[in-house]
Structures are given as structure tokens and as C-alpha cells.
Image (cartoon, rainbow, N blue to C red; front, side, top):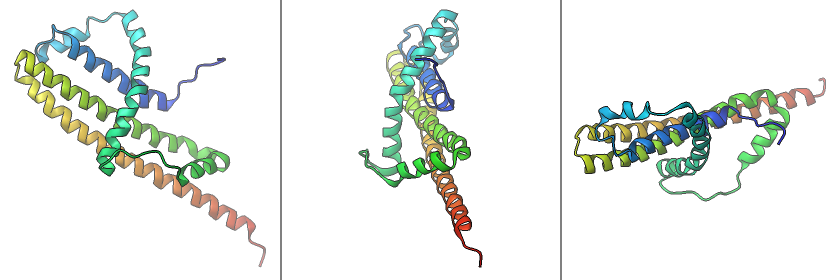
Length: 191
């Protein structure tokens, strides 16, 4: 392991949602947080060592969270959990990696933003359930606003994931069409 490489996808797809998940779990599991107004105090009790360890745990949590995010995305978009099936997408990505290297950054950006959106939707689901438990155990009605907000954000994040998915696929097709047009132009014989 010569170098540890953290890229755009790792940060957006795993680290940020994983950090959000750890915060939700921290708040949900902290018995001292009985009202929304005690959240700030609970989070600010962390020291630097805990934050550093938290970053590693956040990455791992985000990696695991990605499976839940994928499942929510599938349920939202298709109404069912899809099984993996080989498609032409793998061949399209192979062509872009081979012939369109300069376009990979934008495709990876759309993919990372889709992952961020779907994974944050999963965090919202966990936050809604944590808020429901807080409401049940501590009877603070302000948790109802958190529950409603979490479900609204879950919907918004899933909608964004679909939009980013369309951007990704549309750009992928456009890049391949550019490549095909360039090949057609270069292979035409002089008239």
C-alpha cells in the first residue's frame, strides 16, 4: 500500500454521509439529549482525538451506508430492489476510460453527487427513526419537526439522486456520440 488515495467520490459518497450518520447515531444514542435544544451541547463535547477516530469510522459507516442508499434509490425509482444485471453501461464506461479520459472527471462528479444524494437520503431515514424514538421516550413535541423534516429531506435527496443519475447517463451518451462522430470524420475518405 504505497499511497492512500482519497478522491472526490470517497469524500462525497462515503465520508460526508458517514459523518452525518455518526452524528445522527450519536444524538440518537445520547440519553442526555432529550430535546432538540440539547443537540448542540452534545456534539460540542467531542475532542480532537474523537474527531480523528470519527473520520475513519465515518468513512466505514459511509461505505456500509451506500448499500442502504442504493436500496432506497431502487425502491424510489423502480418500486423494487433490483438485482445486479450486466448492461451496456460497463462497456460505455470502458470506452470512455479508453478513449475519453478528459471526460471522466465530469462523469465521476455526477456519480459522486448521485451517491451523496442517495446516501444522505439513507441518513434521513435513520434520523427520522432516531427522532421517533426520542419522541417516544422523552415526549418533546419538537422531535415531530425533526421527523417531518427528515422525511422531506429524504424525498428531496432521492429526487436529486435521480436527477444526477440522468445527468450522468446523458453525459455518458453524449461523450460516446462525440467519439463516434470523431471516428466517422477521421475515417471518411476524401471525396
